[in-house]
Amino acid sequence: MPADPPPWRDAGPRRREVRDWVVDTGLFVFAVAFGMLTAAERLATATLDVPMWVFHLDQVVGVLGCAALWARRRRPVELAVVLVVLSAYSELVAGAMLVALFTVAVHRAVWTSLAVFTLSLVAGLVYVLLRPDPELPRLVLFLLGFAFQGAAVGWGLFVHHRRRLIASLRESAARTEAEAQQRAREAIAREIHDVLGHRLSLLSVHAGALEFHPHASAEDISSAARVIRQSAHQALQDLREVIGVLRAPVGELPQPTLADVGELVADSRRAGMPVTLSEEVAGPVPERAGRTAYRVVQEALTNARKHAPGAEASVRLAGAPGRGLTIEVRNSPAASPRAGGGGPGLGLAGLGERVALDGGRLEHGPAPDGGWRVTARLPWPATA
Image: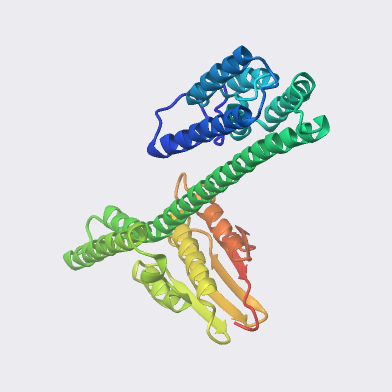
């Protein structure tokens, strides 16, 4: 499959827009005016340096060359080569030739523009040899043509590279926007995983209690059902807040902080999981670090309920400005190991990425007592 053309190069014939008509008309008028001024100058001289029939033929060639400019967008290189060859003898086609050189420089590769420009210099040299001006030395006439042709090609190359730069900036902006959207989607996915994983694990604990104790008292069943209903309602509320990221700036949404870890631990206790909380934090924690610490505790407790039902857990928070913030969550071996519980899943992998983005480090693995340990260390600048 052929590669797409560069964004600064025409992909092929297209319908002219208003701007295209204005530009094409302006260049056509320039070429006609250039030819008419040259013809008027020749007629104003006492004698022509060529026979009259040659002058009339030169006029016809000039008119045809100007008319051919309306096809310059379709065949810029071919048109330029034809006009350059004709300019080796016809001076009235010079205006159209300059427009063709400009068009090639704008719409084609640089090496193509330089090749056509070199051909135009050869044609200019042939012209001064075949039709010298009686009032100007041949070198001056050649240098004058070189200046006009170089200006046309230089201007065209300037437009060419400007279009390339603009196209590159637009492409870079589009790529940056796409990457930002992808990061936003990943952030939303992590939030959904963290929030719903925690709530659904609580639902699973209470539903499992009803399943394994079918003969529980009506009061216990009612209490468990009430907790399930409240947890489901809270899960929906949390999901609405996370999805709200798609409609509102993140800064306008409520975000968990380190101070909310106590409520997180209380939720686990209400679900029947023994959890102890130890806090040795000196001073207010930076908002971003506190939010990440909350997610670490949330994910660790969720995994403990999922993979080690009936286990005891401990949460330790410690740190100070300049020393960093340490979050450690341990759980004892499961009281009743669950079949197919498996090891750590994508939750811890995503958590590791979140901690790394904050400049921290996440470690997890078996604890000496046979349980599981999750430890995160986050930076806490002394000037925070």
